[in-house]
Amino acid sequence: MKPDDALTHCQAYLDGELDPALTAEVEACLASNPDIAEFFEQERTFLAFLKTRSARVDTSPNLIDGIKSRLQQEQAQHGTAPAPLKMPTQRFSRRGFLAIAAGIAIVASVAFYKFGRSPECPYMVSCADEFADIKSG
Image (cartoon, rainbow, N blue to C red; front, top):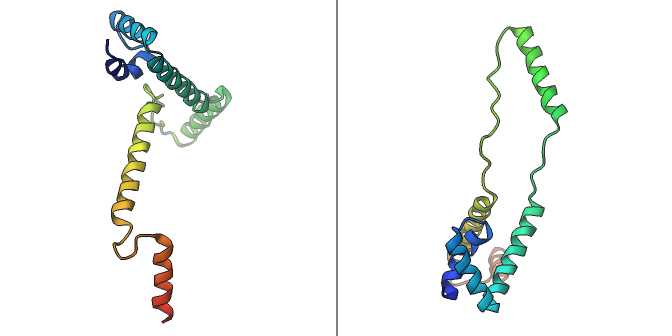
């Protein structure tokens, strides 16, 4: 496997999503290319960092039981049944959220670069100075 091919499979390899044959090819490439192996290790370290920083916080069972009992009390007082509680079946992927956030940041940066400055006034500070000069004089 070529190093470029290994790089295209990096995320799937680190997530354990590759089939055994492709995993073996990637590992052989890593064994023969120390630069690619170092890149994979940096990616693995970064993913571990993200997982530790974005660990899911579990809700206390007492809180859930308290909410359920209060809903039951409300139902008994008003004679109406609350909507059934549904637990989420699938969490939103953190990797997907990070990709969306990165995309928004890139679009905002490009928009500011493209439309945020005028040709006559390319820097924010000089624009403020020019505006002050126009306003005062």
